[in-house]
Length: 392
Image (cartoon, rainbow, N blue to C red; front, side, top):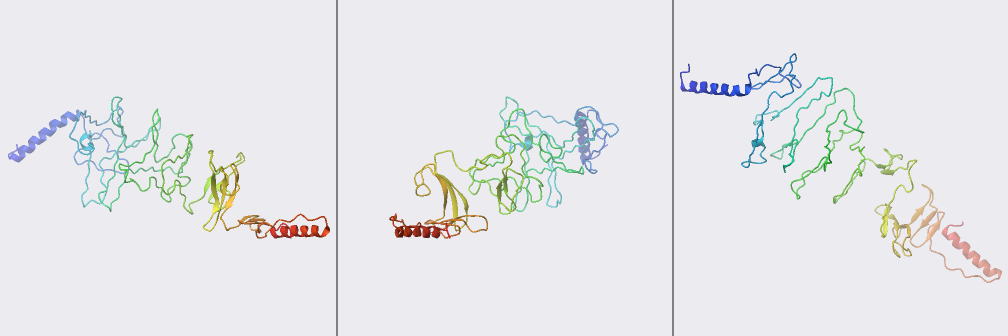
């Protein structure tokens, strides 16, 4: 029998613990089962081990080994978002300054060797449900990664899929792929967004880059859209630098094919056998004068325009006229690549067949019927044609 006060207190504590244990034990042996691990052998718990079922005598009744039920009607007294106080089960791990490995609050694992039906294995399954009369938001899971200093790293969610089957797997036309990092699907009615990136402050963006792909992470395509959505990519916000930006050397933009047909181009629109004319359109269906810079550099440019007013872009244009204009003081050329230009136009004249542009010749007076004035007029015409390069 205990002789000291301390021994008596310890004895009473053991008796009270045993009485409480009878309430939850339900007459079973907590050690009657295998120590199930997902990878290699894991240690057993310091305080308690609950094991049920063995390889030879597995559990066959569809019920959990341990269930914690808590019916709540808490009206106040919460701190933060209330998660520590309102959890039916709360697991917490704290590492001291001597810790050299990660701490894990709750770890769930599942493995399955079934060969019939759909014997999946789900490590963690969370359901958040708001009933029809409720007004809250339902979260299947909430994960937060936090750092308290500038030298630490934080990750909200790290998700990995390991394909150890010995061969690659890719075919995402329909349904769920056999291997996938995230399988995102919804219910019987459309949800507003599949993935939403947000911030709690309008003045401070939450992220520097919303979606970042590491250099060697993806082999074929960063985004492949096989859906029948009305739009594949829709950009509606205000972007001060660029709505779409492609850096030099990043690769070309290709429309109508999956790769360029001409080497070294930065952008290509490929007209297939069924392509209709026009394959590309720039302009507006409004009554406005518009132009596009077809080509240009720091010293000159050429624009294609459509006029909706008199003298728009060039003197003499009228509503509905189209044309090309170029930088004043420069010469516009037409000709075969690497060959002498056949047409040259300056802001004051025209030249043909490699001749420099010259201003139009002066008026040639109609000659008299005599031979001498007629010869003078013909010679003047010959000189004018030679000057612009029409004749040698």
